[in-house]
Amino acid sequence: MKPIFTLISLLGIAALLSGRAPEENVIPNDPYFKFQVSFLNPGGQTPIERTSLRASPAVLEARAGIDCGVTEAWAISTGSRKVVVAVLDDGFFYAHEDLQGNIWTNPGESGPDSTGHARESNGIDDDKNGYVDDVMGWDFAFDDPDPDGYVFDGMRRDRIQPYWHSISALGIIGARGNNGVGVAGVNWETAMMLLKIGAQGIGRNEKDSLRPGRAAKAIRYAADNGARVINWSGFVDDPTPEALAELRAAIAYAGEKGVLLVVGAGNSGLDLDKAENAVYPVSFDLDNILTVAMIDLTGALVQYQAGDRLLGSNFGPGNVDIAAVDANFTTDLENNRSAYRLAGGTSNSAPVVAGIAALVLSVNPRLDAAGLKSVLLNSARPLAALQGKVGCGGMVDAAAALRAAKSFSE
Image (cartoon, rainbow, N blue to C red; front, side, top):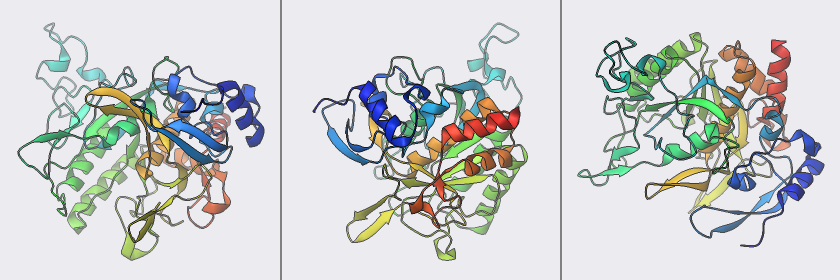
């Protein structure tokens, strides 16, 4: 691979072309931050690696300033462990080297109990929330306290396989920043609650009929145990009215407790404002849902060809609210080793917005779900390509959001 631009020149170019002063950018010492173009976009032909494990050079077409503005936001806040972000997904590799310290620890299930035994493993519901030894969250698929990253293989039901989907989202939201390891998350410090809702043994073309119920339980758990933001880079594929009603009620309950649900719009290239394209939870008419489209590093909605089909970001100004870059260099895991890779899809644009929502709350924790959503939408950076495609007509801007939240709290 050809040498990357020096960090100083990269920052100078990005600052010049985006209208920022270089001194306004806070740059962490994480070695792979140089590949986090979605956080600081220098523009032009930008060389990176696709993975940290082997030579995998790539060149991204970028436009300066098409990033989430987080390097400026870090001058205001780098996050807080007091802000709990729940992540719904199908299992978690929480032992990744760059996530340590940023996984939520349930205070009611930590430390010694009255007999001197560890609450984490004493088999007692110490905090009386209905879940025993739920130290970092819960596995709603196996109904146990370990939300690990292993699921039954739907193609071969006699084996269990690792599930990788969530690892990139965790890194985007909360990889430890400025620790000299890996990458930086939007939040250098945070508390990520792990809620496993994954399908177990679902084969090709099968529907996971239990997923809406598991998701509903997980959302209520998050709301009852201190989460302020929920990231769900997924959807349910059971459209039965009963299942959807249970899920909708849980999201509404979370909204009443001030919890914002951030969801990915999906990658089918569909107009979600058309009734025949409805997908849930995106299509629920609830004010505490914030739906995220994906854009590339030039500011255009992502589109790609898959055989004879044109796919890409779902859109629709009635149901899709805001956009973020999906091409994020973030945490990965391969052969049980901590790694890093370039990830994509709305599964990776949604965590950018969820992470920024948490960053906003670190500045102004008094915001309720409606207030938090308003701050994010009203501070979005307008983009011509998003007019008529997403509700606010723009992409998320962490620096503008934090400035707005900070002035709101003063």
